[in-house]
Image (cartoon, rainbow, N blue to C red; front, top):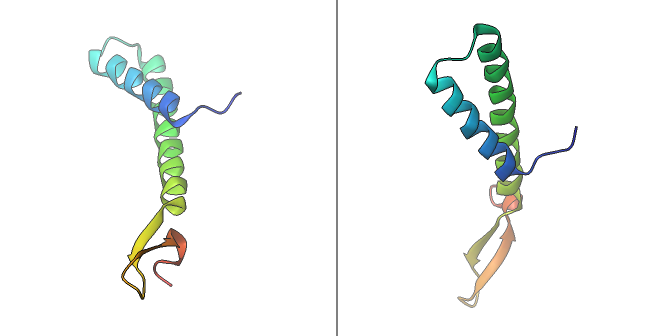
Length: 76
């Protein structure tokens, strides 16, 4: 199966929520949708965590100018 983009996963997750909120899906289908939604939510969270690690923090350098520092080194 092809990896979905964050936006594709989020769109599918929103679609699943709409279907589940209608309440007319048979139990087996609702369970399958719930499982798919849970997997999509986990995947979206992992993608967000990965993106967060790539964010560069802008800090004030010795001369007062902004300096970029990798996110993962911000706490260490």
